[in-house]
Image (cartoon, one colour):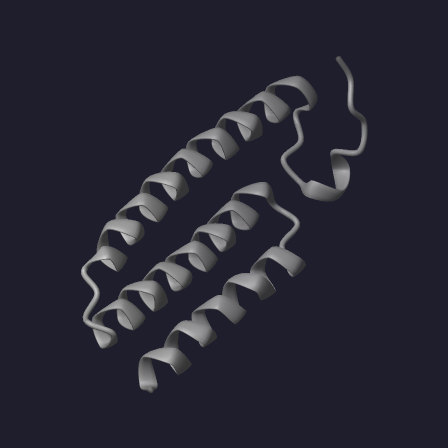
Length: 96
């Protein structure tokens, strides 16, 4: 039961980071923390239920999280090159 508390704490910490951070890198790091907490919880529940399929699903989630981080960083670099800003509240205009 303690793993549930730890992963819930990590999830809440990541959620707090997403809601309060102004820097895009901090927001991306917080999203990765949320995905990591969910991944650990998935593996823990799979181990408790003795289902090895949960580890394969956790590996899939890890690959999706890495792809999300790569796309997020690419968007961050594009936004910084275009506007010179990396804060969320300063990026208000969308241009084509």
